[in-house]
Amino acid sequence: QVRPVESGGGLVQPGGSLRLSCTAPGFTSNGCTVDWYHQAPPSKVREWVSWISSSGATMYAASVKGRFTVSKDGAKDTVYLQMSSLKPEDTGMYFCKDGCSGDYGQGTQVTVSS
Image 1 (cartoon, helix red, strand yellow):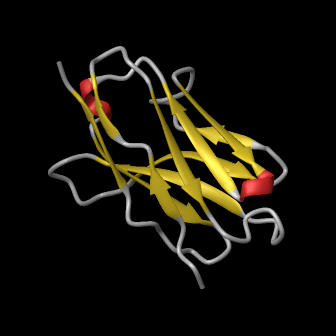
Image 2 (cartoon, rainbow, N blue to C red):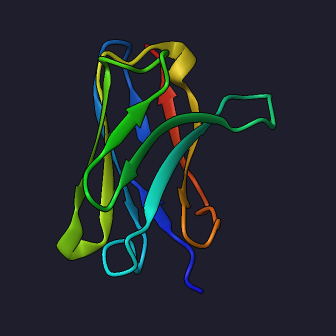
């Protein structure tokens, strides 16, 4: 099983935006889902952020609703997390999880700082 791969993290100022990507092989053809998680330092707990199904249904945590948007490109088996109005507390590692395999990617670092 190939693990999902995240990308797109970086350093951004408060109020700025970033778009994360997660490529999950089989997402479309297997009718899978993808979840996004946030791990804020120094915690080792991964907090759930968002979810999308291969049919396009979405869900969000209350802390990000209205600021983050999850979308997909089925042809590329890729899910995006558009993050806007970023806050310092959004800093941390972001992981995507393949809902079919349960595998997490390696994560991508997001730092929100002036």
